[in-house]
Image (cartoon, rainbow, N blue to C red):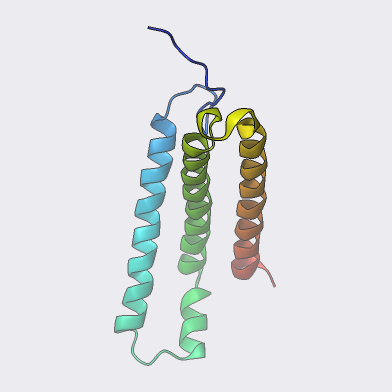
Length: 128
């Protein structure tokens, strides 16, 4: 059986093992789900939601820390998911020899977008 080198490695590590990618994807999904449930609980059981109650809730230290963890989880989840899509669908068998260059551009754009949104979220919760 002939092995083909696709030129791609694991999204997180250089080992080629997808176990870490799988763990990042699953753990981040759990964090995002819990954050969604907390937000849903606030709106369902928080009574009359006003600007003051929303501000106090979101700017409390526990929610700021939880939001920080969630922003990082979202960045990791998005990166692993998009890396998987790019390496599965932007291939030489589908796009020809230009696939590597296209995949590089798409991954670079994804890295830039993820960093911009991550820093933007951090500035919202931890900025002035």
